[in-house]
Image (cartoon, rainbow, N blue to C red):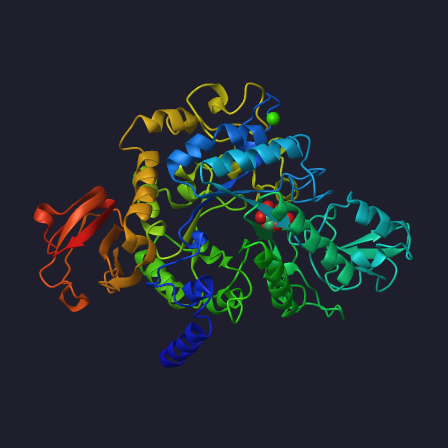
Length: 567
Ligand code: GLC
Ligand code: CA
């Protein structure tokens, strides 16, 4: 298998020899001339929660613009802003009612243009979120679609007759609870919604939908947007025959029967459409990031396209699901690194528990946060951070059902508390409401904002924030960290993950203790071309290497050591 992969890599390399970005993508290990996004640290901004410039308790675009210097200083190369388009906000922006404007609560198109221009001055690119699977039920397309069976936009969505009175067309379920079908009495048919009923799925089999949506991307590319994060791509197509999904044993968190999502997700048509979307992106040299919930590496690989012609950056969201175990992470990274395409690592986002809380052991929380930063920001690939991760923000889950804002948390309480906890305001300082707003924030800040905030951590060289700044800085200054191959070391160590990043310019050694017990690691790099080498510390936490000898790397609980290999 490995040889076959190698053979294809060589053939592709020759085929793309005159296009540097394709070349880099097929053989990313040691290739100079990478595309910008291969070196980037991308920072996800949830606009409601980043900074509120006008005191209404909700973050906005001018708030983001006012924090660009902070992001620049952190070392961010691009920001991905989750949906800031006009929206009834049922799903906090993921229900778009106009794709080519800005929601007044976030500002205006002029504010957006200013944000892009100010970001550009700081060499920060702006990436938007493209909600491809569905619109809001308030979008004029849907309003027209539901008005009659013969309306111009009827076939822009998925309408079907029920099986019988009160019976939906089939057994498909919405991922947000209840059925995926909603009956509409105006025309006596059901429409399909994989998410909330207020988010009807678009019919991508209709060429008019495709054209309209492609034009949306052009509108933003022309305004200077560097690319899109594509929302919910897995659910873009459904089986046109509406075959029932197979029912599995047991119940889900909403008390419904478990189902294999065989006919409503990950259909082969998704890949064809992504290739077409990519062609439009290529007209503008834009990057496409995917919200790709894959269940294995082979599936992730498919999202790059057979010739690198789909997504440049399908997110490895499997990484967010691993236990804090050296063996689990080592095995996973090895597989992703060996796969086709440029890895895209992410440890948290606006839909899942914050990484700080997920990995916390109650004793070494900050050390664990630093170790994870030292880990995923030194791997070969692009890293996507979530706002607040760099200061060790924790989840602040609602304590009472009546406080929940996210509808899935209301429906699924108490088992499913919704996603409010990972969306609380960015913690800028130790004042009331963490300096996010002068008004009442839309979600409350946790007690820990007193210690974990930008102002306090900026002044502390040992803070999580200082560690993030340093590791991001290293990514930019150590060529091996950007371009070098990933070479796992000491692969049978049950507690410590170690690897080299090795390029023609040298090598960087990364050693991470994934346990609460002190560990020692020794390395013989003779077989790696570094006989008798020593190591010079670049960054460490709870770790030391006396005399720089590779025979004795000492790590405290969750210690991390990053050093340059020297002869
Ligand atoms: C994606 C978004 C999530 C949203 C859903 C529906 O999963 O990340 O926040 O609720 O799509 O648009
Ligand atoms: Ca505001």
